[in-house]
Amino acid sequence: MNNLQNPQPEAMQLDSLALELDQLLLKEKARLGQADARYLQQLIFWQRCAALCGRLGMLLCWFSWWWLVPAVLLLALAKILDNMEIGHNVLHGQYDFLRHPRLNSQQYEWDIACDAKSWQRTHNFEHHTYTNIIGLDRDYGYGLLRLSADLRWRLQNSWQFLTYLTLSTFFQWGIAYHELAAQRVFFGRKKAERHSQVSDQQLKSAFLTKARRQLLKDYLIYPLLCWPVALPVLLGNLAANLLRNWWTATVIFCGHFTGQAQVFQPADCIDESRGHWYYRQILGSSNFTGPRWLHILTGHLSCQIEHHLFPDLPAWRYPALCNEVRAIAERHGIPYNSGSFGRQYLSVLQRILRYSRP
Image (cartoon, rainbow, N blue to C red):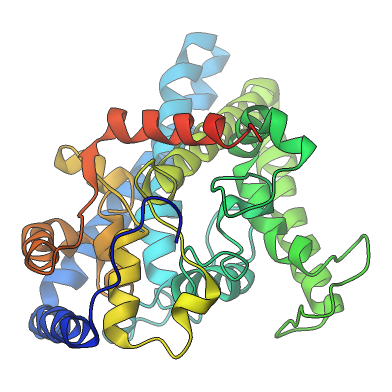
């Protein structure tokens, strides 16, 4: 690990950690049921209301362009809820136990440029398996940012703060292209150690199909359907997408790349026990505090530690688990990184700037 490392716990301590966290998970899974179904149904209802009101609000630009401001905010809210609290969590399989025909990890497709199956391969499997392991977790810095001294400094890291701003602005497209970039699809030669679960042709087809669908929907079909106000509708869709992109990127960076989030070397994780995997998830993740509405808008990724520990547990349950997880971590001498949203975001910016220098 990097210079923030803690002494490696003994195997017996890790086994005890795994036992306590497994018991907590089993206890919470035993409570799954109608409350989860009701929460998801209410969430989708309000998400659709926000989307409908946002779309209708844009039509009122016929009378005054000032209607564009609340319309954009409502549409951005709908897109954030679809992306974070619905899409991210459904695609993790958190609601598969409901056996809903559409709201399950195999069928759901979200309203962003990234193909759901591509995201599941790079995020659900790679990131959650190899969290913060240098060279194995391709989500760590997304191949663009140097966020640890364990990574070699390159000239392009000198301006990585600008890279971060650009990535945040076009975040849905960065995530959409993430798997293709790793496989060197469209350019360059694939690295010998890179192996994909699907062919390059399948990757290209999925990427182009989803990209075409999103571009046509937001920037051609909806504006043409509202022809008298086509321009404000087009601009409103663009603004809502940008707000969603910035919010999503900020939440994700605050959960993964704060100043105290630790990294690991592959050698530390050979034949990794379940206890060590739990240990790595706690040290490699960060929480931030806030009111209930903030948790909902983040998809409950404000509780990133709990999400990394229990990725297939309905996320709305995470805040109630925070105190128990913190107590377990403290009993085992493991730092539990949590703070205000502002403090965590400031530490992210400091980390980006710190490692932009050799």
